[in-house]
Length: 517
Image 1: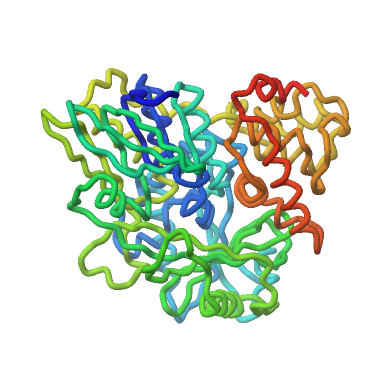
Image 2: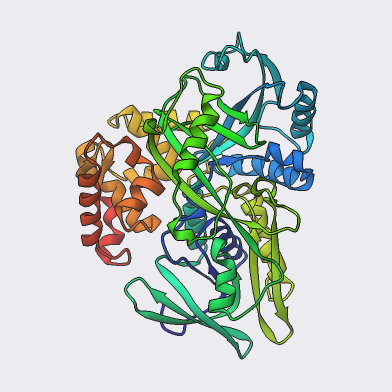
C-alpha cells in the first residue's frame, strides 16, 4: 500500500469482531484495510474462557434471544473450523442448597431445544458415584448433570479470520494505530501510525470501529464523535494449574455468590480455571490478575475437588477486559448482557461510521454479518451474506471430522513425532501441509528453538500469520510457553525474539519462498 491509498472500508481493531467484519466485507467484494494497534487478538480476544457456547447461565437472566443466537452460531462454527473448535462435555454437580434439581433440568431442556442441534449430544442426569467425573469431587456430591458446548482456540480463531480476509483481498496491518480521521468529500481521511513511528495517510469510504475496550476512546479521541451506547469494562481473570483430573470432561461449578466457575482440560497437562467478573477502570492494555482473584478462584475450586489447590499451585494466569454493553440497572457485572449493539452514524452526505458495542466470541460471525449488512444500507455493497457455510482457513476437513484428518496427516508424515503431528493438525488444520511443505525429516524443519518448535513453523507464523515476536508465538498462536522445560523460558524467548529481529519482511522475495524450505 502507498500514501493516500483508498479503501471501501477501514476496520479498526484486530480482535475477533474486527477480524470477522474484515473477512465478511472482503468476501462481499469490498476493498478492506484492517488496522490493529498491537498484535492480532493481543487483548480481550485471547483472554476468554475459550468456549463456543450458548451461555447456560444467561438463561437465569432471561437472555433467551442471546442464548438462542449463540446456540445457532455454535453449530455453524463447529463446522467452519473443526481443527480449532471441537465439542466438549460439561459436568454440573448438583448442589441442593444453590439450585433445585428440577430448575436445572428445566434449564438444560431449554438449552437443548432453543436452537437446532445436530452435532452435539443432549443433556442428561448422572450418578456421580458411578460416573468417572465424580471421582475427583468431594464425596458429598452424589448427583449431577452433563451437557454439551464447544471449545475454541480463541487467538487462532482471530488469526484465521484475518487470514481469510487477506486471502479475499483485504490488507491487514498490525502494530498500526488509527490516530485520527475526519470526513471530507464524502469519505474518511485517516492518519495511521506504525510501530516505528512512521505515518501513513489513507482514505476510506466507511469506518468500522471494532476497538473493543477502546471503542469509546476511539470515537472521542480519534474520530471526534459521541455515541448513544457505551461499554462497561469488566475484568475476567483465569488461572492455570497442573492437571486436576484425568478424564476429558469439563466442569461448571455454581458458587454461593451466583457466579459460575469453569474447570477445563487444557493443553493436555493442565487445567484452566475461570473466570472472575470485576469492574475495571484502568488501562485495558495493562490488566492483570490480583491476589484476591487468584484466591477466589482457588477457593471456588476447593469447594468441589478433593484435591485442594493454593495460589502456589498456579502455573500461569491471564486476564482480559471485556467491553460489555452498558445497561441501566445492571449493578452486578455478572448480570451485564453479553449481547451487542451496532451503532451506525451516517447520512446522505457523510461517510458512514459503524461502531460495535459489546459482544462475545461465540456470536462474532453473526455480529460481523449484521455489521456489513448495516453498512450495505448506506454504501454500495452488492453481495449478500456468505460466511455461514464457508470454512475458515484449514477448516476444509471432510465432513468436519477432525480425527480422521489428523490420522491421515500423521500417516502422510510418519517422520513427525506423533505429538507434534497432532499439534500441527490441531493448530493449522489442512494448512499444516503448507507449513511442513516438502520436508521429509525433522532436520529439514530447521533449528529447534524449544521442544517441538522448529524454524519452519516460525517462518510460517512470520510470513503468513503476522507473528513478530516470541510472545506472539509462545502465548497467542500457540501455548508452547506453558510446556517449556523449567528454567528455559527466558532463554527461549530471547532466542525466538532474536530470530524475529533478523527475519526478512514477508514481502521480500526470499521470504515468499521460505515455506518451500
